[in-house]
Amino acid sequence: MIVFTNETDTIFAVASGAGRAALTVLRISGPGSGAVLEALCRRRPEPRVATLRVLRGTDDAVLDRALVLWFPGPGSYTGEDSAELHLHGGRAVLAAVADALVTLGARPAEPGEFTRRAFLNGRMDLLEAEAVADLVEAETAAQRTQALRQLEGSLGGVYRGWTSRLTRLLAQQEALIDFPDEDLPPQVEAGIRAEIAALAGEVGAHLDDGRRGERLRDGLVFVIAGPPNVGKSTLINRLAERDVAIVSPAPGTTRDVLETRVDLGGVPVTLLDTAGLRDSADAIEAEGVRRARARAQAADVVVVVQDASCPPTAPGIDGAQGVVIRVANKIDLARPVGEDVVGISALTGEGLDQLRQVLCDTARQLTQAEGPPPLTRARHRKALHEARSRLQSAGEAELPELRGEDLRLALRSIGRITGTVGVEDILDSVFGQFCIGK
Ligand SMILES: Nc1nc2c(ncn2[C@@H]2O[C@H](COP(=O)(O)OP(=O)(O)OP(=O)(O)O)[C@@H](O)[C@H]2O)c(=O)[nH]1
Ligand SMILES: [K+]
Ligand SMILES: [Mg+2]
Image 1 (cartoon, protein in one colour):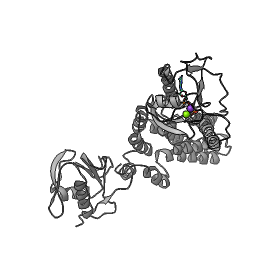
Image 2 (cartoon, protein in one colour; image 1 turned 180 degrees about the vertical axis):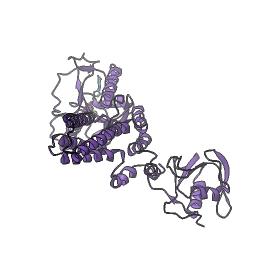
Image 3 (cartoon, protein in one colour; image 1 turned 30 degrees about the horizontal axis):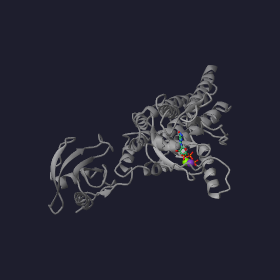
Image 4 (cartoon, helix red, strand yellow; image 1 turned 60 degrees about the vertical axis):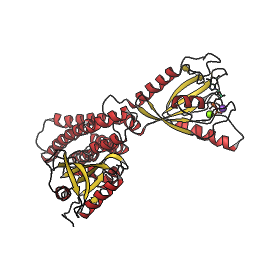
C-alpha cells in the first residue's frame, strides 16, 4: 500500500546504535514523512513535541508504543519534512517497523544521506557536513573540540571571508576591463595587486600549519625505537597500561611492529613498539629492524630509548621527519647523562609521569587545538593549493583579462571547499564515509 510517490524518496535509517538496546532511534526524512507518520500513528503529532503513540502496521497490528517526533521542513536537520521514532530497541520491533515503512513507500537511507540532504537543502555547508562526521568519529576531547568549532562555522567563516574579498576584487577587475580608457586612478590597479598579494599570503599561511588539523583528525603516530634490550617493550606496556608487548632479558625479543591506541592530552595517538635496532644475520629480525627504521622515519614523534647503564649507541634513525624525544631508561641502575634526555625506569615507574607530560605536551603542540581554525582534510589542502597558485599567477598577470580569469579560478577553488561550486563529483566520496543514519 504505497501512500506516496514523488521524485525525492523518503528515506529511513537507525540513527542510534543498532542491536539490542533500551531504545532505538529511527530517523525518517523526505516529502512522504508526514504521510508515513499518519499511516503508522493514525494522527500526526504536533510539530517538535515528543508524543507517545501506538504504532500500527498496514494490517492494523500493533508494532510498538513509541515516542514520536514530527519535524516539518524546512526547519529540520535535513531541511525537509522528517520524523524520529524512539522505539523499544529490540530486533523484532525494528524489523516490523522497517517492513511497515517499506510497505508505505519509504526506502533505507544510504550512508550519510541525511546529512547530504541537509547540505543540498542549504542547512549546512560542506565543511559543517564534514564536521558532523568528524564529531561522530571523535575519540578524544581535542578531536571533539576541533569538530565542534568546524560545525559552528569557524573554518567556513575563514573561506567565506576570502570568497567575499575575491568577489569584490573580481568586480573591480571587470571594471578595469570594461572601462579601459576611463582614467581610473592608478591606485585602483595598485590596490588590486596589493589585495591579491595579501590574499595569497593569507592562504599560504593557512596552508603552512604543519598539518595540525589533519593530524588531530587522523591521530598522531609515536614510535618507540632504540637498540635491543633497552626496555622499549617495558615502556609501551607502561604507557598503554596493559601488556602490549612481550618483555624478556633476551635481546631481539620484539620483531613485528606492535601498535596500541592511547590518548595523550586529548590527542589520539597510535603508539608503536619496534624491534631493537641492530644489524642481524637473522633474516626475520633484520626485516623487523627494517620495518622499525621505516616507521621511525615516517612517524610524527620518535621516542629514542637508550639504556642509562650502558654507553649510548647511535640509534641509526637518520632522516626522521618527526620530533625526536630522547629517553634514558633503567635509571634504577645508573643515572642518565645529557641535557635533553628524560630519565626513567620503566621497571620501577620512576620518571614516567614526567615522560608522559613531555609526550602530552608534544602531542598538543603538534595539533594545537586552539589557535586559528585549521584545515582538516586533504581535499581542503588540495583546493587551497590551487587557489594560492591562481592568486600568485593573478598577481604576475600583465593582461587584465588573464588576471580576471585567474581570480575567477581562485574563487572557484575556494568555493569547492565550502561546497558552493562544482562539488557534484565529490559528494559521493564525502558522504560515502559517513555511517548509516547520519
Ligand atoms: N633494571 C631495569 N630493567 C629494565 C628496565 N626496563 C626494562 N628492563 C628489563 O630489560 C630487559 C629488556 O626489556 P624489554 O622491554 O624486552 O626491552 P626491549 O627494548 O623491548 O628489547 P627488544 O625487544 O629485544 O629490543 C627485560 O629483562 C626488562 O625487564 C628498567 O627500567 N630497569
Ligand atoms: K628484550
Ligand atoms: Mg621489545
